[in-house]
Length: 449
Image (cartoon, rainbow, N blue to C red; front, top):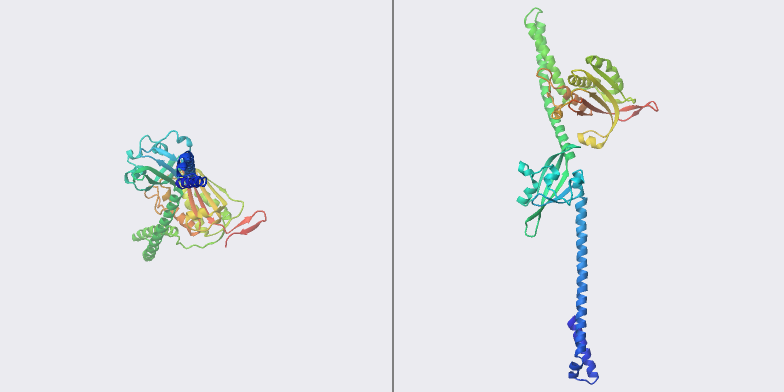
């Protein structure tokens, strides 16, 4: 561009001199200064033009870089997962807002005071791997590959929580790992749902097994009882063998109760469902259940003003109440108080999904609460298992709560247990609501067919 411009100007000067009658010599002697001035002016203009173009390109590049950095920073800060960047010395270089919320207080981390991950996350003075624990950051620096695992933490407010930790290598152009980017996701709810589903499948499997055993055992037991009664009919009252036959029949009766409980647990017992006004039913058995417990235990009924109606087998519901009474009596050897309440509850889809069956809607809740010794957290997940008991050998079969679970399931209901050791136990039992009494109109409102 500069050469073309200079050549063009020189040609103009040459033509101008010819027109004025001057020759080549006059051109290069009289106008040399003009040519130099024009040349340097054109060169300067070209340099300035080139610098302007370069500045514009640089500005566009800086703008694109700024936009890119802002985009990356926005993505980094707005991720729902906690994200941190660490160096080889386990120092935290950068964190996002989700990480700050995860550690509960920004005071535990400050960019001006770089801390190590084991200090911020675990409150330790030395790295985790020195105590034999898995360190995903060191694993990434050693292997250069991503690493994922689930780690259990303890939160003062939420208790035990589970975090899915995924670590990624950040490499330079030569492939060397410079930093480690680590994401942390709270998967506690997913773990709990998986555990509930596992428990549900386990209970279903045990129920199928228990039902099959109970059916086959019932067939053999029927033969034992039949032949025992026939033998008893053939014996005189004064014959010594009679007492052995009676003992066989007595034990057979106890075994029959066990098989009946197993069938109830497996939801295969024969029931006769019919509309039951739950409040009326509980008021009807109030005297009998108060006579069932000792004098140092009081029973209080707190029934809802609405009169809930459910489809149920009265005998099974009474058996359910007796089983819960037995459980409460064992937990209150020194006396105490038992509260039985009824309320109408709306169960949402999230609760139903956690159970794995049923439909959301209105349910009647029976809350059965005692102030006994409570249940240890370590065994709470096993209380509905058949034959599980904390009693001494010979003092219980461990079928009461498992039969209760089966009754609830066979009535398409749900049961939840809330208990703390030394603070009592509460069972919430939900049955689908068929109808209830509207106190404003004094009419029953139909909920389900």
